[in-house]
Image (cartoon, rainbow, N blue to C red; front, side, top):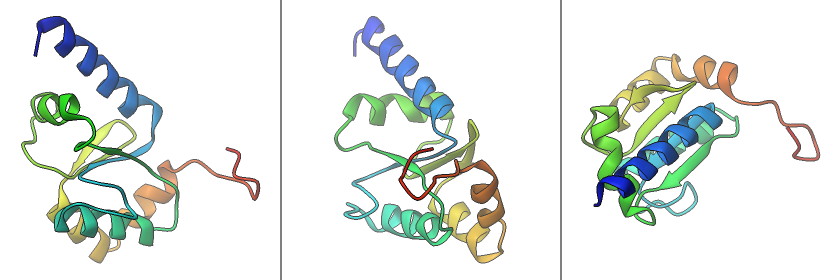
Length: 118
């Protein structure tokens, strides 16, 4: 990647993290995950019952290449809550099983009314 492209990608990633209180970088989508780890992570998040954003890194190879450097976390999925990296699949599942993920997501997730507006 060209240095300018790298800066654009980094700015895009930082913007995504800032604009989405609960954000999952994953392979595929929550409804159609492309790997088992992404499937487990998105299922745990969906079980929290709150809306969350996701980025399919398979559709965004620039983000897939750049995010591990920014996050200092080499693997996907990656869960970010309120701008902070929570971790990958193992951490997400462990926090969910211990009941620690649900309140974090509930507190961070935007309230959505019946019409789907925030």
